[in-house]
Length: 414
Image 1: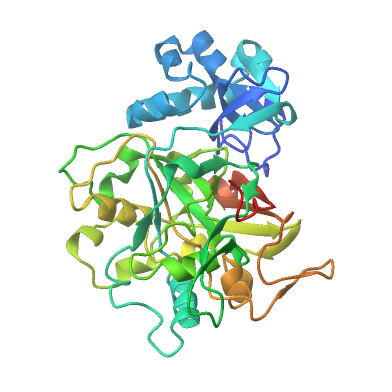
Image 2: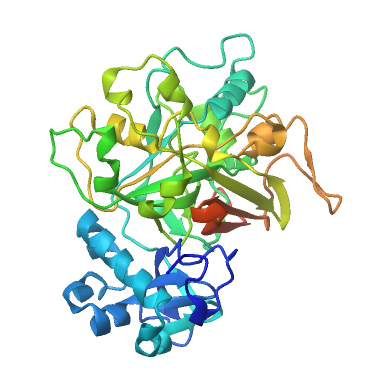
């Protein structure tokens, strides 16, 4: 059945972001039974209870979903991912399965979403040339904005897996060591320069062996899918600590991801050639494979759209990030999450962070309600959403990653 006619019995509109070409996975519970977690698949305005559906229709894979999170399914490998996606597509697009699964479709408004998988390691890259250039000009106005190594390798920092949280989790304003403007010594203070960073994340399923590198062309064998990421940043803490080893406490207080993991297989129609392949690269980064992605992000602040960053402009592809991550023999683990770094385009309305939009607070952002922002204030809510190119000119959705800033504990608390 053609995708244009798919899921007729569900009455899913063709332009719905969670149509049959999408089918992202997550962990949910019914609001009436919040402790009972299930693996679900988003379809239209419903969530298919995959834990129950697999028991009923795919018993050979049922064990992969009984924990209520994606950990076992991620570890099952690319053969299992393809098999289950094909089965779900059949259940949802062929009327003969309607009676078998209709009672397992839960209205999306009645579910509570949870962290979809156990995060093993978290690495955040710096893959946007536009973002790196913008930041370089702010931090080094009298020097070249890009460091000499930037176009030769995907730069990254190692983040804190234990503070990755699911969309909707409040983000507490951090405190830390900050050197105030004009001061010669630092002080322990509440962060005043809180920022968002709109990013894409990649979720590893199949692990690798310590000492063996993963080639760029093997991305589909190891990476299960993608999610949205907000790498919240305390710029004043970061600015004092990051020389010479890079971000640490300015980033580790919280990272928000979307609750739905879109399978990499759903992005076949979104693949584009990344700009890096048109440059002279070391061999392991120059392997063929167009894994740039035509994905458009949207960032809203308190309900107002402030940016639409285009992921297609990213210099380094996720395949190259994966190859670089393992080129020294570092192994992958199931549940590893690596993020792209801030996604920014060439125009101010495509910048993926307030630091860029406001030029580090020098040019405050004016919102439609008359308020202005140099940095995030308590009570502000940031929502990152995205769509990607799908089959037959459709757009498929990645859900959203939302977080609201709550006040810090007093610096002297505890």
